Image (tube, rainbow, N blue to C red):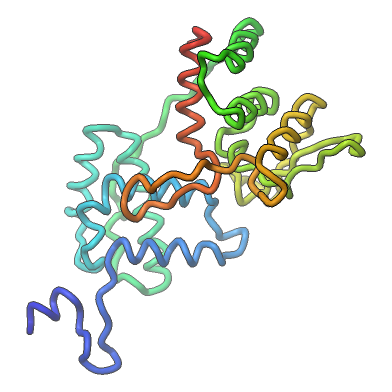
Length: 271
């Protein structure tokens, strides 16, 4: 009986009895609460998807089923050390996700302590100073329409819009119909990216991206492909979940766009 209580929590021991919350269950609650937070406190959808992706891959497989208040800083450090051997960035992302989770949980009195406080595993990518030439842009643009590229029509449109607008993969891929101010009667087309979807949320304003005639036409073509019933400009193709507990993107994911860019650069012979 004692082993059962230790494993499952004090189920059936009066009104105060409650099954112990596991780490994965706590993160599920974190996600749900984040959706209802105010704009100033809410973490972006991109941030939460990144947290989920890295935690599912490196942390939840070993600690996801463990009651959260039984996890120690040494348990977490061991997992992060294993992750760091493969990728310092992955370890950094895991630590960031766990840090945000425990900070939220501590604030809501759901955990006794935050074991990530003072923990290292900070990785800062080197700033890139890369200027692309006109010839390289031309090579990329031409390669997008090359049959050898093999991308879908939607992906080709997405990449062209990314080149013309200079926006991040996730922001282009996650564009919504309601964000676009385009059409045959619109003389000044623009794309309003809400602050909640932006990676960097300095200030409290949305971002306005004014669109060239060509960019607006590409967005219009993407909307026609998506269909009138789709709020998502670049909806994801239906696929099975990659792993248990992961969320499936409703639009073309940043990872998918990054893979397409890699194939495109190789085809165009652009470093």
